[in-house]
Every structure is written in structure tokens, then in C-alpha cells.
Image (cartoon, rainbow, N blue to C red; front, side, top):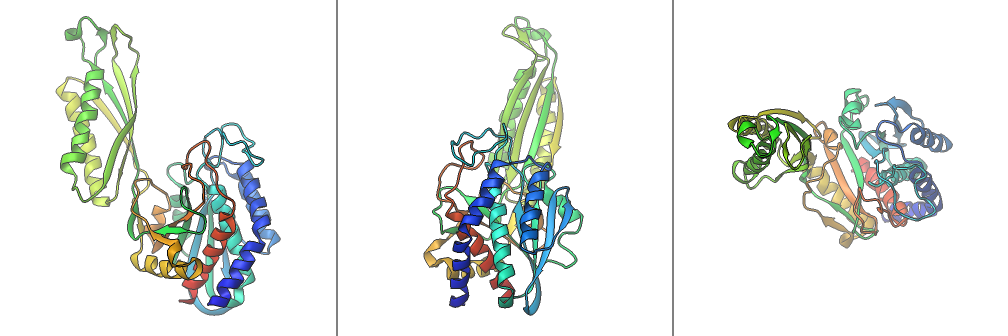
Length: 393
């Protein structure tokens, strides 16, 4: 095993210039969710150059392919990378800055694709070292509902051949290059979007008795809904309800508006809690508005479920990662209230989603997000080794 680790590390380091080249191109040419046409074409070109076959057209611009090892074994594991960028104007001043106004790889998906490309090249070179099948997924639309993962699952991406384990790797700001973080069980939160319109009766601010104050009703709704988190949720089950938009439609200093629009997000770590509280959010919103003679129209867009890391697979991956990176380079991470459409895979087959250090601290979804490019060969090599180790185990 030590000999294989050394060979993979040397191969990954030897690829660093190429990995930087791939990441540079992807970062300079970001595309929004479900618009990843040129991104897909670039990935196809790289795969073809290395003799790696694939199928196109998955969830629009996605790619799926199979690599078969020459050793014994028939297990099938999947490796996944997301492809889409965000509607953010990049503020970094660097040679590889985004060339497209208002679009940026601010969540590291350019790095995720580079890692998977590198891992596939390594796996392809060392086919004699492993058996079974690696199914690879370049997935579009992670940042936008309904999530490319759900569409790929509907099309059968986890079947033919059936996947026994799927692995995803994500950038982790603030974590040093060479380290990874992983945790078992519910690892990331569900995410649902709330759109509420409170309808009252507008009029002059000096005669509130002749109006139905939609601003007051909306304010009471926001306050009342927080009691669901503080008093109806099990304290042992994390959940967050936040409103990011509170807008009147019309109104002025001396005009009570007729309508107020609220937009928010609800996140939790437990699917039963999610189901129950979403029902209560709708019910309470309508009741509170009605108690103030207003009307509430509630739209809940169901988003990604909780992401569940398989406990046994996490233990295996932790063991393998320590062998490759060193015991001190693998840390246990606490669950986080952010969400990921990788969660859909985790409800279908055993899954592990882990975080890889990128050296720099600026958070994802920030206009100055960036990475230390030394994470490229580390992440590609680690992903390849983890795949081989799971197939050999």
C-alpha cells in the first residue's frame, strides 16, 4: 500500500502544471446552472485526450462515464463533481479571473472538476492496481433547484451498473492544504425556500383604523414563526428559519401598503422535523395573518434534503485518508447548516461527502473566494487513492 501511495502522490505532483491549466480555464469561463455548455465541451476534450469514454446529455450538460480496473472485484463506486458557477461579480485581481461579467466560480466547482479530472487520469494510469468499476459524474446545476443531482437520479445515474457507494469532495476555506474533514450521519442541512405574500387593505397612515396593516401583520408573522424554532422543535435537532427579504409593495411614509412580500429559507438536520415544521410554517403564517384581518399566501419550494454520510463508509474513508495524508491531516467536522444537492444521492445509496483544505480563508459565495493551487494535486491524488482503496477493501 505504501508503494501505491507514493506512486499516486508522485503522479499527482507531476500533473500539477496540467491541473493548474485545467482549473485556470474553468475558472476563467464560468457558466451558470444548467447553462454549462462550454464547460461540458472542455471536460469532454480533456477526457478524450486521455482515452476516457463518457456519455453526454445527463441533466442537460452533464457527463457520465465508467472506468474499469484490471484487477479482481466487481464493486461499483461513483465519484462526483459539480459544474456550475454563481451569479457573482469576481473581485479578485489575478491572471485567471473570470472573463464573464457577473459570473464566477465562487463555490469551488472549478476545483471540484479539476480534482475529478486528475483523479480519473490517475485511476486510468494505475488500472492494474484495482478492480471493479469507477462511475464518474460531472453534474450540472448544483446551485439551482431542483438540483442536477435529482435529475440525474431520475435518469438512472445510480443504476446500470448499480452504485454501491458515491463519494463527493468539496473545498473547505480556512483549512490548510493537505487536510480533509469528514463527519458521519446527518452532515449538511435540508434547504427549503419560503415565499410569503401578506395582503391587507391600504390607506392613509393617519387613519390606520380604516386599513388592514400588512406591514404589522407581516412583522407578527416573522416573530411568530421563530417560536416554531424555539418552542416546537426538539432542541437536539438543529434547525434555522431566516427571512432575507421583507418588502412592501407600494407604500410611503404616509401610506399603509396593501401588500408585503417575505422571502426566506428553512433548514434543518432531520427529515421528520422538516416535514412537520414546514406544515406548521404554512399553518401559522395563515393563522397569524388572519388574526389581524389580513390574508397570507404561502409558497414553499421544497429544496435539497439533509445530506447523510454513511457511518461505515465514513470510517473506511477516514482510515484510507489517514493512510494517504497522515493521521493528523484528517479531522472530524461538525454538521453544518449549509446544503448541497449531493444529498439526493445520499438518500439512494451509501454516500460520503468530505471537505478538502484549500489554504485560503475567504468563504464560498464571496466575490474574492480563491484557493491555494497546491490543493489541486493533493485533492486529485487523495480522491484517486480513496477510490482505489474502497474498491480493494
